[in-house]
Image 1 (cartoon, rainbow, N blue to C red):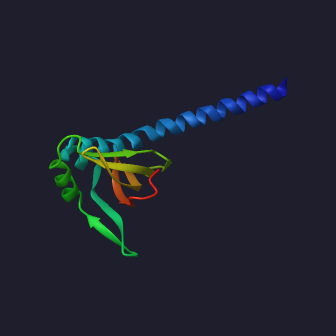
Image 2: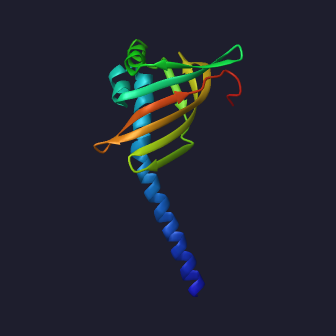
Image 3: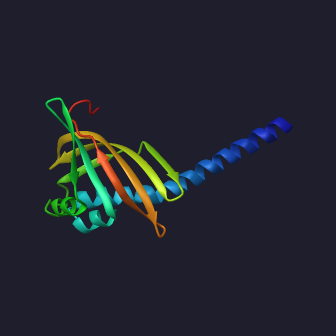
Length: 151
């Protein structure tokens, strides 16, 4: 009987810990989702609001066997999004990994990007978020882009 009580206690503690972790992840996910909702809506203000004031955006570019990093400002990106028709830019993500320590969060999201309903490319987004005054903001975003291996 004591073993059953111990096992049940361990299971309950594990469940409570898992629930607490999921609850902590929700505001982080909400900030990342805000970015993609803004993109899909063509809403530059919503996109810009997801980022910290000093945010860095980068993409890894592979061309002719050479790898380089392209830097993009938040303002440039938000302006570009704002010129898109609602529904034109649809980046579909999957939350694969979320790690949180104090005011720092890491988020890894594989994605598929569709433009005007047609598949464009896929890759992975790697986010670093910082919690400022209780609100999560994207501080750093780097992604990969490819057209193959997107299953």
